[in-house]
Image (cartoon, rainbow, N blue to C red):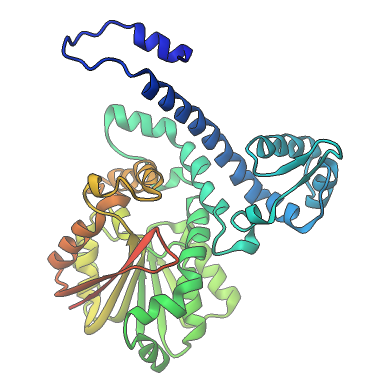
Length: 374
């Protein structure tokens, strides 16, 4: 029995009917917790390896010393050496003791390098340090209620843009847009398109470039994201696209009636202060022959249906430390990322959409794609 299990087993039970302490289960759970601590530390190091380009550098060179890798990546050797130690202990990087050289196995590079996009899982590791930065704020919310505002997440839009760059952008033309039968022909001919909660607007930029006869608009609460998006659109010469910083809390009343034939949201509705108001606004601004395409987290509204979700723990954590709390910071509904298909269908119907279908894509375990029509 482990030391911790011995301590726990020695404590008297106040419940005479309690089941006897299971030493095997306690030892197994303790081992799992140790693995969790190592995994959390590894996530931080994977994030650093992605941001500094160390995984990409290791992927490009033969086995190297820490000094050679640091020189190749243009980084400080002492930090690179310690990073390599952590990744070697985690068996992510291979270390040859005789030659003192490190290498990244091809099988590991296949999900840790930019070359591996859209399968680069190092992108998602960035959520761990980004969300860890607001832990004190979240603890305060646990104790006093309220929420954490968007401005406490300086890198979140950057990470989200990379996330969607793997799940949405590579699949946009071949898999996502075809779900809305016939929309490509309408885009070719020229229609008005709105993306609500657009963030940095990379999906809109791709569509605006491909379909120059159509006009594209993006709304987002974040002024920083909108400023970045407008500057990038100008840099790309996309005159048929612009972005606006806009609070959508009253979108059900403020939306311009029947102004857009195609409306999209990419992982945006559950973050809103008033999701139903946003959805009603989308219905109001959509033409009667229009289509609304919503990408959102693929899960159930019921916890027991999410117990076997392959990334359920991660999604609930992102929800607690971002999606739910940014809504609550605006005195909002706080739906959270795991609002689920059942609640989504309920709100779509309440917003005035008569027909909603749910689609899943083979490459994307994280999201589902709703098509809503008046």
